[in-house]
Structure formats: structure tokens, C-alpha cells
Image (cartoon, rainbow, N blue to C red; front, top):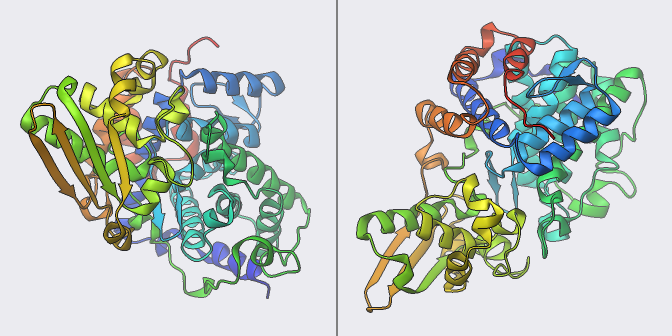
Amino acid sequence: MTIVERLAAFVDRASYEDLSQRAAEELKIRIIDSLGVAIGAIGSEVMQMVRMHVEDFSRSGASTLIGGGSTSPDLAALYNSGLVRYLDYNDSYLARGETCHPSDNLGALLAAGQCAEADGKALLTALAVAYQVQCRLSDEAPVRAKGFDHTTQGAYAVAAGVSKILGLEPEKIANAIAISATPLNALRVTRTGTLSHWKGLAYPYTAFGATASTFLAMRGITGPKEVFEGNKGFQETIAGPFSIDWEREDLERVTGTIIKKYNAEIHSQATLEGVLELKEKHRFDPAAIERVDIDTFDVAYNIIGGGEEGDKTRIRTKEEADHSLQYMVAAALLDGRVSPDQYKPERIGGTDVQELLRKVIVRPEPAYSARFPESMPCRIRIRMADRQVFEMEKQDYEGFHSRAMEWKAVTRKFDSLAATYAPERVRGRIVDLVRDLERHTVDELMELLTGIGVPAA
């Protein structure tokens, strides 16, 4: 058997009964977290552009759009995944050489789940499969150092999850994964240098392409079965040799994923919690700050601190701001929070935040790098004009797997994000349904999500 056929066999035999009680609970927590983020993004200009694109090409189909309307499953995967991803506020998985956001898979599974008339157990199982595939490939076949984006592994994950929820047989699952993985190898330039809208839309596009690929495989279209190990395949051209024994894999990797406390890039979370704790404790005037020193692990420095992925002090857009540790620290110090409001154009352009971010100095600390990703270590040192110094060291934050965010905290996050567009009654019904998802269907969930107010494009 080829590797993709062994992977397909894993997808085929996965069942709801394989999920531990903890894994099922963590999946529900991530669904409600993702839906809150999605609803919170519904009024963004970029997502309104995506919705216009979807509506221009299809105003009817089997899959429901969050906020109402319907379209084909691949276009629904594009739009609904875009909502989950755009704010950059959904969950993450930290591997030694890769960081991914496994809840990016949810939009595609909701779209395909409606086509399959799937129930809640089927959705949880398919989502667990997608999490497992994406996280394990991130563990064993990281691509960031090779110049490729983490959405590359997502092509395998989406196809695996969509295949599962559609109930495809192993042969068609293998073809779906092989077709999806071949064209969707994405460049890391998406997240380096001057950042664009594509930072938030790269995975939704993967969801769109992989969903379409899976439906083609369902019709009987075949793909290259040696996509992993073959001549010019994934191992030879991108990842290098690696091994995953899919016969021994379970569905528990979701329990190792982490949730964002702040609307900020994942590697900033412990730093931001520390900055806000110092501000709360000492109640200093941010205008009197002379310098802020941040020592952090190398991955954070390289991605958001001004290391190998580019300067992080020229901040003009939302995409640049939420990937600049300097900006996020400055906004936290000035505003006492890091939420979607901190990425409005008028906030980004504020003289106070632009001046303060240039006082934030970020450095890599080898001792911290050695402890990542098991912890998220950092040291914060704030020096005031009167020579006072406030200092703190952090190892994690609320939402990290060592301090897991519980259902109550996640529902508070859901409410804070969804309140603008969803009435309290609708929000309550969504939370209750997800809490008891096994007794409901994907159609029932999507019906509730049509009760979201969508601004006029």
C-alpha cells in the first residue's frame, strides 16, 4: 500500500466511539470558539468582498452560508472558512518546526456535512480526523523552513475530513487526498514581508480547493497515489523523508491544541498576558514608557518580532498589525486589551501606538527557544522615564494546554465576539446546540447560523 492508501484506511476506520470524552469536549469547545470568531468577522470589508464573489457565482446550493444564503459546498467552504480564519483569533497547534490552526478545517466540514445530511457525531468524528492529520503532519513533516506555508499540510487534512463526513470508501478517500495535495502547496511568502489579505484567506482557499477535490474523487476522478513517496512527490520535493504509522494513530491530537486569549498571533499570547498583568498591577502611564524589552523564543522572534520574516515596525494594515509583536504590545499597553478594535485603521494609524511600538525591542533568547513548544516562555521588562522598571517572566497563558481554557471562558469569548451580529437569544441557542452536539445535526446548527445579521456589502 502507498502512504496515502494507509492514510485513507485510517480515515475510513475512524469512528465516534474512538473519541475519548475529553477529546469530544475539546472539539466542542473549539467549535464554539471558531463560530464566535466567524461571527465576529462577518462585517469585515475583506469578508464582504468574499461574500460578493460567492454570490456572483452561486446563490443556491446544498450548503448554508453563515449569516444566511446558500451555495455550492466548495464556495461555502471558502466563505465560512474565511470567517473562521480572518480575524486570526482561532485555535493553534505548535509543533517543533510548524504552527497551524486546525479549526481552519471547520468551514469545509460544515459545508460537506450538509450535503451528507450528517449528524453531530459525524461532524465531531470528521473534525477529529482533520485535526489529527494536520497536527501529525505538522509534527513529522514541517515545511516552514523549506519556504512553504502551513496550509500545505491543510490540503491533506481538509480532504481527509471531508471524505470522512461524506462517508467515502477508502479508494475514493485516497484519491481525494492525492488530488487535493498535489496543487495546493503554498508559499510561505504569504506571511513574510509586506502582508496582504491573503494571510487570512490562504487556508480558506485550501478549504475551497480540497473540498472541490474531494467531490471530484467522490465522482470517480483519480489522483496520484504516490503523492507522498513518489518521484517528485511531497517527500522528495518539499518535506524530506518522514514516517507516520497511521495504523497506530488515534483521534486525540485536539487535546494538544491551544486557544487564543487575545486577538493576536499565537506566539504573542503569553507576552501579551504578561504585559497586561504588569499594567494592571502597577498602573503606570504608557506615555511615560521609555523602553520595553521582550526576550522570547526564536519562532516568535522570527515570525512576529522582526527576525527572518521581516521588519515588524512599519505597520499600516490589520494583516501587518496582528503579526507585529511590537504593535500588539504597544496596543495592549495603551488600550488595556487586544481585540478586533485594535486593528481598525484609525487605531493602527494612531500617533501614540506608532510611537510606542518603536520603543519595543524584541530579542531571541536561546534558553527560551529550547523550551518551546512545550512552553511559551518570555521575559518582559518595561523601563519608565523616571527609571522605574517593571519586569515579569511567563511560561504560558490562559488557553495554553498547561492552562486550558474551559467552556465558561470560551463562551464568554464567543459572546463578546458575536454580540454585534447575533441577538442574545440566537447566541444562547448556538451555545446550547454545540454543547449537546451529539443529539443534533449539521443542518440544525447551520439553520441557527442563518440568524446572524450580515451588513450590506
